[in-house]
Image (tube, rainbow, N blue to C red; front, top):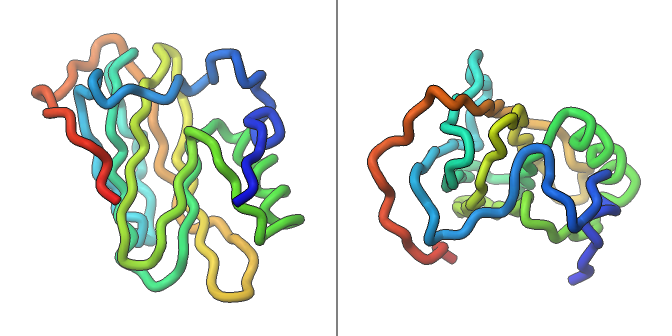
Length: 158
């Protein structure tokens, strides 16, 4: 497996805070959002999350194709899409993305920044096919939002 420097995938400096936030700690988990990546229609409104709260994005791929879910802003995702087109077999490793095999689930634990306005872009890929956008789920943060009741920390499911 080839590991890429975060700066090669996203324009952010790897040591800087990403616009969307930072990888969260499971110990700080306060809210969970479930996303069915087989959906064909995205939600019309963004999911509004409390600013600065650590959230589990629980992803489920009940479909038959491998998926790649990436959290970022529109510019970052556009750059990634170009990279995926040039090197579809390259395996990317970063805290803001996860691969989902058919019938499997995965999670991203993320602490959204107070001014976050980002999206989770899900790409699909069949055998010997290029990655293609499948679903976009938008997020924004609000200081006025309140978190759902606490979520008990758990270890990631494998």
